[in-house]
Image 1 (cartoon, rainbow, N blue to C red):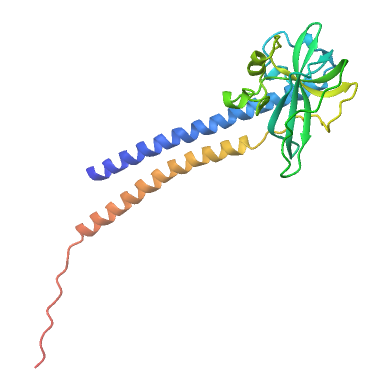
Image 2: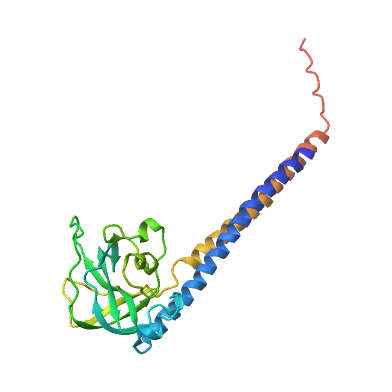
Length: 257
């Protein structure tokens, strides 16, 4: 019996560790679901709000609650400091984006001028399409800095994979506000095949069902312990019953005449 208790204890500890991990993973998926739902509400609300001056929003480090508010800014593009964003996707298409600083009377802000589609095998151009000259008025979405390793955010020869004002700012001869504007429209119009970056998908995603799966795994592990222990008890009972059953000796077979 002691050997069974040792085996059961080891099994229970093993399942307890796995079950705790599964429950934590399920809880993590539920937290991600809650974050996504909050993001969806914020995205829809901000995108429907009236357009306001960019200096009314870019007064603090930009976070998720600020994103997708439409803002307007008037100034001049700095064509001497442009940046290419490599390996971008937009609505299922692959291509690149161009970031150009906009200098205004109330501050300087980075503007993601939009997405340019590339056909399969087509290389990224060495130089970005020139922005409109003179005074321009842009309308776009408020965007927070993208997060990633420094190797992805630091410009190298004017190119990077993620846009971050914290990484681009030190390469400019003037300060820029935190975050950037994702361009929707510009007056006068720009050339170069740019299209706006699409809004994120407004859905709950797969997080709820991922959470259900993790909780099911925890439940299966607990049920497995019960089944395993009951099987051991049944087998031990059968062994005890077999041991308690007296062995009846067979009658000798008499030899014939």
